[in-house]
Each structure stands twice: as C-alpha cells, then as structure tokens.
Length: 202
Image (cartoon, rainbow, N blue to C red):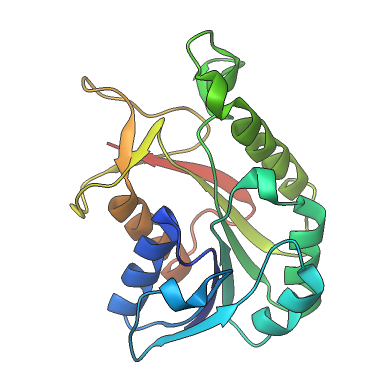
C-alpha cells in the first residue's frame, strides 16, 4: 500500500516507518525535519506541519491510508481530520494516548490521582481528539492507544489487544514503540477496528 505518515521522525513514527517499509509498503514520511527520516527505497521524505493543514492536503492525496503520529497539544483535531478528508483518503489511523483508557468502569487513567501532572495536557487533548473522531462517519478511522508506559524496547510480536480498558500485567502497563508499530500496521493490513479505538499492551 501507499501510506502517508505524519510525524515520521518521532519515537513512535520512526518505528512505524520501519515496520511499514519492512513489510513492503511505500511511505511518504512527513515531518518538519524530513532530513531526519529513515532512508530507504520505499521512503519518500517530505516537509509538512500539522499546523499548516492546507499544505498537508496535497501531501496526503493519492495514498491508501494516512497515519498521524503527532503530539496532541500541537494539533487541532478538526483541521487535521479535515485535511485527510480533503485529500480524499478514507483510511485514517491515529497514534493515540493512554489517558482516556478506563482503569475501572467509568474511571479513566487521566482522572486517577497518580497520573503525572506533566502529561495531563497532552493526555487531555488526546481524549478530545478521540471524542472528535467518534463523530466522524465519512472516514474509516482507527485510534490506537498504547499502554501507560510507551517506551523504546524490543520488537517481540508478543502482546495483547483490548478495547477501552487499560491493559496491565504483573509488571505494570507498558508497550514498546516497536510492538505498538506491529499492532498498527496489522490494523492497516487487516482492518478489525474501523471507527473505533483499541489498545495494545503486554
């Protein structure tokens, strides 16, 4: 497939770029610093910024899917979703956050006392982005939330999928960028969570 990846040089974005191209997908790697993107025959690096949705439209056009892997505090959901829509791409996947996942019925992670204050604005914006997506019925969107700890690690291929509840084991709640990328690319290749959020963790 041809995939446009916004935020291709970030922690999650760079792993997604590697996973996509490893599986033979052609990727337009969009970022503010395209020179920092991974190099490869299936990668076309382009300069783009979520704060300039008008310019994004032409970059996104002609792709089978768009993935956005960007900080929610830097993003306006309506303008980014609008750019995907204007580009004529139906499949839109979002690297989400864990804050809006439930730790108990009706209790979200962000609302718990132990949630780090430093991440509250980003997590809150992520929750707003998800709520905006829930009102979108003309795109085949998917919002993939990582576990509480979203960190560099190994590509193991051994993880669990869930829906709206935070996944955890005896070691806590975590997922590597590398395994998150596997789950996201799996969803692109075999859509199983269209117009819904799901989560991945160990």
